[in-house]
Amino acid sequence: MTEKDFQVLKQRMLAELEGLDPHLTYHSKAHTIDVIEQCINIGKREGIEGHDMMLLKMAALFHDTGFLRTYLNHEAMGCNIFTEKTAAFHFSANDNKVVKELIMATRLPQAPANHLQSIICDADLDYLGRDDFFTIGDNLRTEFLHFKIVPDSEAWEKMQLNFLKTHHYHTRSSQQLREPVKQQHYAELVGEM
Image (tube, rainbow, N blue to C red):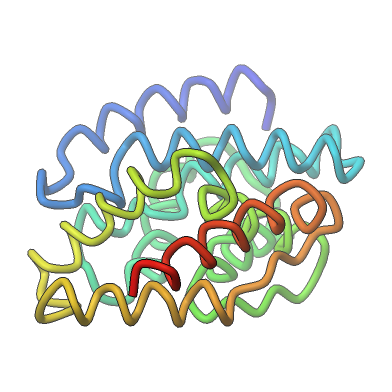
């Protein structure tokens, strides 16, 4: 797998993500692009490069593609889509396994088993410790209400507070860069209750 191969796949998959249900206001093409970018940013801060960085980017590209076919268990479906879409690219059996494990690591509750999994987990939830937290969180609220993941905004607020309270970043760089801002968001939400 070369960078050129990745760019070809990225262009194809981002085009396919245009076909996502428009009610996926959080799990969108923009989210996938953000997770790829954050995998690169966190990966660099964590000393990842070369082939491992390529595997991370590939997993980030495919981590939410399962939403094209299903809402529940979308990670497993994303693994199937990854296998389908990359068959012609001659991934090694080990690389195939690693990418699928990275995709599955993003399932909640997160329990990464190694450094690369920790990076993609932190990339997937990077926004929790960023200035765009409230905007992105509102997109998730809208999506959860539409798909009846929560019955109303009050239930959403309780879920969001509990999630922020129990979430923790896995990489040292995200703990340093994002955790303090995430704690500010949590304090702000508690103050509004």
